[in-house]
Length: 519
Image (cartoon, rainbow, N blue to C red; front, side, top):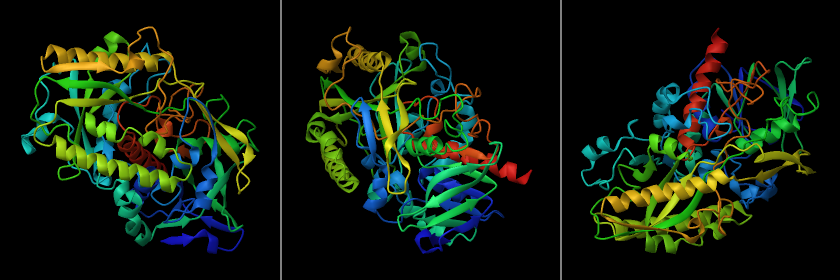
């Protein structure tokens, strides 16, 4: 069922069992999970079904520290959320991503990879992927031309990805699931419904209602038994911090953790690979056909431990293709998200066509490494409230993106290890980019350094309220019926793109709330 909140009378009160705030990957996957249950689910989306620049403008904010994309263009405010400019890349986190690592400050989740495995399988279905199997051996049976490099897999291994057909070029999850959500009798989707305040009970132990506004001047109240924030890492933190009438520091922020530990994936062109001879394989071709696959070179867990580095992977692009897309960072940084998305997919489409023509069946001899690496959790990398108010009267978000020495040292070491193994295998040589060649320089970054458009952290998961915002079940510490869904809960960011884990974690949260309602 769909309701345009602009058409509701002012001061309407809406009631349900569960209120999900945000209809992106997390919100949609949870709403789908509640279809045909006996519960009334209120799904609130700030935008509509199409891009609206006035609504998108609510995402504007300031950035400081390491240069970052304009906040207005780094997320999409419409049904489907940022899956509207999602590349569709999916791979699960590794075991090491969940454990406490003594060389990575503030690492360690209160859950393990095994806890997420059954939900990863369900997430594969929601994202319309193939079997929940990310082992190269399995896919080689389907596609015999997936020849790996002859590397020591105990040091450098081939990490597989699947590509969702619901990627942004196909309209994202909004297009794929609009009909299912709108037709569901127990799912009440309210578009143009921006939550601006969360109101708790008198002793601030549970949430009573949320205040919803839109640019038509209407205000509504939503009451529910359970409330789930699913608006993305920056907006979730912003809303908690701005809900400060009853808790001066903001809801869930007694220990000053909300907004801290903002993480991104550093995605940087880091090295060139020159093979002695062409290597016949389809493994490193970015497939958008069936099956939809991708592979990157990854560092084994024991090697990460020995070298005390972060988790990272290197994707291979034919050198000519990489040079063709070299200016994409600049073209994607436009303040207008429509241009950003158009430019991104134009470049991506051209690049993948070039890669397919040059690469399929017998890859060329020259490649560039595009390294994606997790960012070390850093409390100084954070979201705060700015002094400027948006059109609905809510303080805008300010982002300070701060990197550390460990980030730079790790990205260098990842490429060195891969280069050493390529050399030992006798198939080629790897040359690091200039910014990685000085072993003593662990602080400077090249022009154009940026992230993968992946917002993580800000409402991190921890069993200890002094170290996290939510517990192992994504419930906000100290609030009986408030939860956070999505990558804001990540304690560490892993190497893969976050969407598959977002959906898995959201489905796990969905089960938890169902059990609470049924008890």
